[in-house]
Length: 179
Image (cartoon, rainbow, N blue to C red):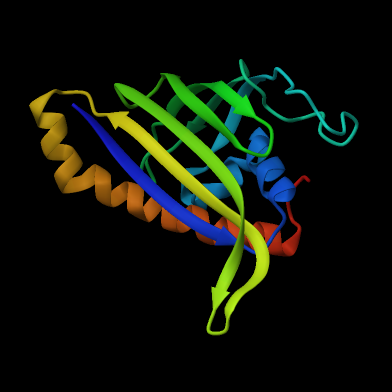
């Protein structure tokens, strides 16, 4: 059975900066909790059509493959491997990564961005970017997977995206990422 998870975050940065940040595979381990010791094991980048080729040489366009490894829980001696491919890419609009091999029976994560003004007490304010994440996933084990989703996985996804959102704001604010 496939499940769906969604998260949204408003960021006070231009759409180009937010999209570029998420299009750089090197930023992915920075968005994962430190205890996971996430690292990119291998990348095969297919550059997207670039507005500034010299500035954006390390972006992952459609067809790119990224092999990531991480620890599934603190102090775990085993590392899980996650092989993903960028299935679609539309500059400053959206891209999707599809799990080729990994812990889920199916995983498709679509990252979408759109320009959006913040809403303050006096109405629209700062122009920024609304980031929308939509994940469609399936847990192995059939009916047992549905139980695991209810008891554990959905909660873990909420925690993971809350952490990811905090780190995204922190990294973009500090400029400690490759732009």
